[in-house]
Image (tube, rainbow, N blue to C red; front, top):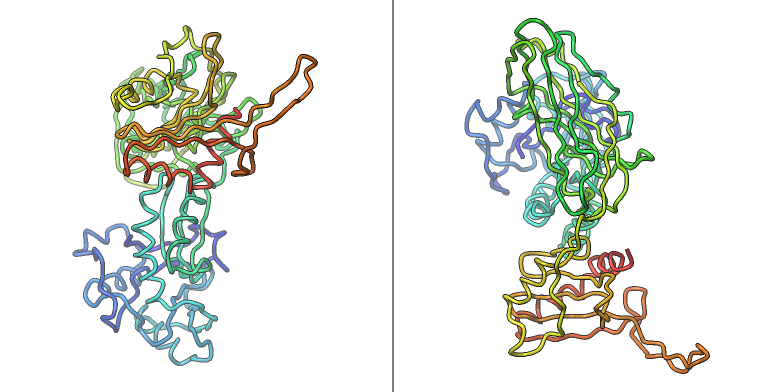
Length: 465
């Protein structure tokens, strides 16, 4: 990620309001080869601060490394850019720190303040590249960086659940725990952003959403922009529109947001509307929260927001148009979903095709897919089925399964307990676990599920719901 952080961004994350994050930092060493360096000025078009642009050019020519031995990064004082903070592994190396500042910034500074660095720039960059391959595939990652203001690697996530997945994944590497910071986007508040229904040029915002949507079906939410003026209007916006849709409980707790953190973009695209003309921006919400868990039936609130610039040639007329809360409901399914009666898997009876058809016909709120090959089904209320398990995990390609149930209790005619089956204490519960592996591949996939404590606790929690 080749970028420089400008003044005011992520102000709460560092020890002070530092200015640029010179990711590349000018190099005097070829010890770590550059990855995907900027090749020309067009690649640096988003880097405004001249010193940062020059540092990135030097990186593309020489490759990142320590400009002086023991260098660990630097940042500028937000209130006085002539003051530079330099991290050094040995904070007594004042002259080396001053040399690093001159090489990287290529400008005079009035003062260089040396801070104790724990990790060298070379180590941070090497760890960062290793961590990228592991963390970037995790759903919910928003951005990542080497944060020089913290002398740490930084990953930003939509939810604490996805951050925990990354934390557990990196625990298997040699990267020190203390070298990585995991940030979680704050939940949007019901009154943020403030309601703003119309811009000075006459563009208004509203929402279209059905009063009730059956459980398990996508909720269509349309943000509508209307030209209420009597003239043709033109405005800039994000690409395509970068609109946000936010779903809340009636109490105002955020359930889901299209853009977690609420940071809107208002440039890159342009639209012209005739008088009375509208633009409809549709979002389909799958009735799941930010971590992918299905939401229960009941009432919900939804808001929409779009940032526009009503002066295509300037950035001082930006405005966040935002609706008030609209109410809708997730209602019970209109008709029961036809479901094949589950049968205990046995050789010659259940094929992978059978398993896939059963999963597709299972009620939506009583199943979820772990990946393309492994899925989970839960017992559901039925007048016709006496469930032998409360949860079943299946590896579809091999027709292999793991089932979970709780120990049986045997009562006499007076409802006194006469005996109780013994189970294993697993994931905080006493359980009976039965495995049926048809192939080695199926065993490997399902044993990986059983070994993932966070995933198993999620499955058991869903089963209780």
